[in-house]
Length: 260
Image 1 (cartoon, rainbow, N blue to C red):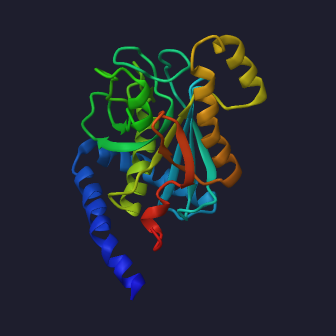
Image 2 (cartoon, helix red, strand yellow; image 1 turned 180 degrees about the vertical axis):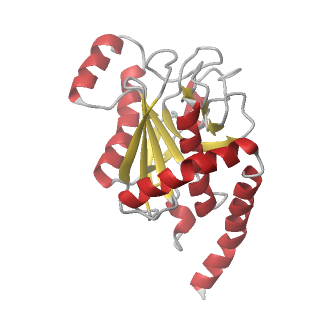
């Protein structure tokens, strides 16, 4: 009976998500993205031993390397597999988090896809959930900035730009996963200054060690980076009063657990 109640509780969210993808498909750009990418996306997932349709995905970006990784699983509790690495076609700003409107910085931290925009000025776009709770503690109180996207057109001031063809694939994968998981699920997008290797830490300490607060901030988000590398499940988190990330159970886990 409890399982039936759980299913009935989530049914409206599933229907809402499915209606959302139908609404998206009423737009010509999304129709074109589906037509051009659906087969190769299905092939990529099947070749990785997963279901043809994306279910659970995790985006992980690295600014120094100009890369966006796609990880995926058929289960919300993993393990996730690396399916593909996309290249960000144009950088913006420097290493370090975004702190105010107009600083040209790409955010760093733990985020999720907040909105899909099929009518973007940059072909297709997905809004990243900047500023989050941690950003609001540290960022400019009057205008921390917003409107940070993963988008097409290969131009950027603080976003993660892709070529249009790459963006179509990213958009369709993300939209499909959102439809599968339900409207309230949060598809994670974590953005790091770089991969936290020993070599990169040497570079960060040398080039940025004198800048107040940067190294402690990076040490904090490195906890999430290490969590995923160890467990192959996207990290969940909460933010304390000092704006510090506290890593907990996998992201979205509470949506599917009868104990939460």
